[in-house]
Amino acid sequence: MPGLALYRAVWIPSALALVGAIFVFATQPASVAKPAPLQTYSTSDKAITLRCPGNWTPHETSLHAVLTELRFQPNETSQFSASADLQGSLMADIGRGGGGMEGLPGMGGTLPVKRKSPLEKLHDQQGQSLEKQFDNYAEGETVKTQVSSVDAIITSFTYQEPAMFGKRDQVGKRVTALLNDRRLSVIYHCAKANQAALEPSFDAMIASLHVGQGE
Image (cartoon, rainbow, N blue to C red; front, side, top):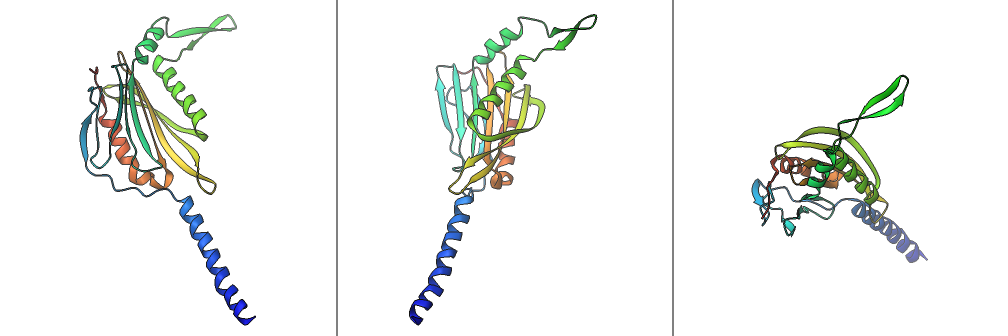
């Protein structure tokens, strides 16, 4: 019996410590290497050019000058993707079909209501798509800026993704810009614990983006 008691005294704390270590490990995001200095990269069809960390591997997809997508995945819980497609041309034509105001009934006539621009509509569609894709998706600040020398909209967001035990908090930003014949869509996200390490590089990549005509 003394031997059994000693065995339990050693085994039970050890087992609890092991379970605790597994839980902590499973709830932590994957480690991420420090981003290397930025270097210029262009897709093979010259549709997208940006500056990215030299130790990040690019993955690109091109569909006959109709769609170009460029992706980076610094670790298992983070991704940066930029795509340019011809949907922008269609949306711009639709937006030119009417004026910028429409009327709502009111006392003494109609009240003018500003219609959303094609850019705003595309940005809304992007958010609706992410809301369907991510758990507990919530949007933060939205600001207007310029990307690739054209007007753009940037919205920050948060969501949760499944982990071994529970869920992991994720953060990100999404960007929409409308060029003459192309829509530019950028989405990046990472574990909240990796935000400080990755977000400066992600933001620098967005700032350096240039969209060409493609080949």
